[in-house]
Image 1 (cartoon, protein in one colour):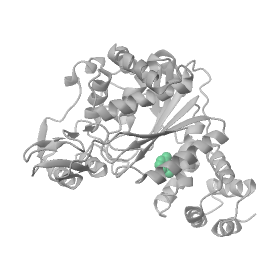
Image 2 (cartoon, helix red, strand yellow):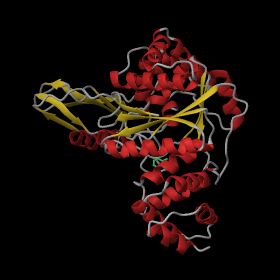
Image 3 (cartoon, helix red, strand yellow):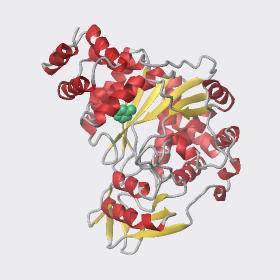
Image 4 (cartoon, protein in one colour):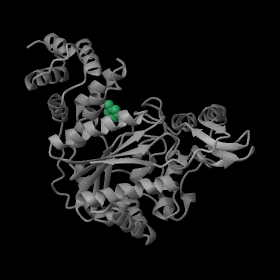
Length: 434
Ligand code: URA
């Protein structure tokens, strides 16, 4: 078998056999197929896509390129909520303690990665003393004890994805639905969970800029899940503006805690409640989403979810008092009020620009070597649809280095648009797909 013949077949939109896909991927991982041939193959996939059966084999080979984690010693029903990534996405911090109230475990590998703000791991590390498990056994113990376990991603999980993603990044082949779907699903399938919920973000701040593409991605990932007999539910959610108000590590921790106290932003609270309700349905505890949401409301309002978060923080060596006293968190002392220049209604808050406004302050990493400043970020005071007067504060910038402030202001200027037309508030939940 030769790589060139496989590339030619894909170029001519013919269906590849299991043997051909296996040959190509396994040999690429071993270094026998060079990057230039794999680049050419990826471009052919970009244009011609992959049939269902091809995608199953492709995902299976990716998944088996490294370790498979089963968590046999975990006694809880495991649900893995995965987000395709957005600005202000602090969902896991509020969701995992709610799951714990219903004996639903979270056993998650989470990346630090590059981005506008840190990943979930970085956000928790805003808490003094907080450390994550370093071994799989420590993770299992933590899940059995607190219901929640999160640790850093290992290079041993789906190493082929890492290699392929680096190549896609420099060959303009990232935005291919079959390649994105197999990349995400191979990692989800390699780390066992009883149920998988995929939060597919749609909008200016997301990978998927329009609803049609997001639906196709969601359907493709559900199909892959089905072909591996795994329960997958996808939820399409709005990312045309940041999620909630806070963008930045410590600031997002506060917002997640406030949400567990019942004082969260409307959109973020709705998302967290809906995701938790879906998990209850997957587990089989409930059948009706509205009834399930009232159960979730109860554990928020009783303080039960918050006490699970405290328990998790304590068991990770973190200062649990932060839950009641935010002065235990590092928050930048310098602030700047970004104000509206005219009267009208907020018609646009481009999520990506708000993310960049936080990133230039030091909230995220542009390169792997960058060190995150947990204390900085942006807190919106208005959302799309808000009525504003000239001089009203649209967002507060928390900064620690004087020289970063101007670029952050510039990014916020790009993000906000005020018009005379009153746009309705946006719903965060667009669609649930099973
Ligand atoms: N996230 C992933 O894990 N892979 C992709 O290809 C895109 C987003």
